[in-house]
Length: 142
Image 1: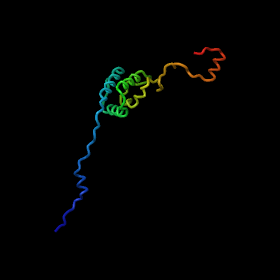
Image 2: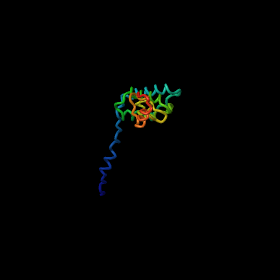
Image 3: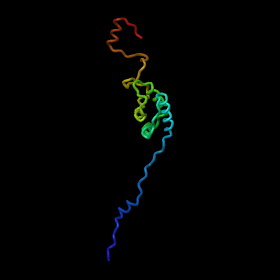
């Protein structure tokens, strides 16, 4: 008489388990409003149609996840400042600049990527040599 074949219980239990399902995160309620802002920006800056696929969507989703307090108004201001900046290639796909769009939050940038600044308001600090020069020449102070 043959001995009964013993099955490996660990192997059998692993075979019967279904693959774990991927957890889908909730869609960000701001997503569509941000897409609309991008479309508006694109339409104002370009004559070609916007190319939008999963890569743009992924980068926008990451931007929103990393900045939960970012409003569509703040984002639109970043886009307006990007439009007013020097040296920007406006026909670049959004996937290339969405990860850095917040650098325009405080205003347009110059061609070197630095904040454009208006003339200083109020008192401007002067060096000691400048103060001495003005005192010697009798130049008027502001």
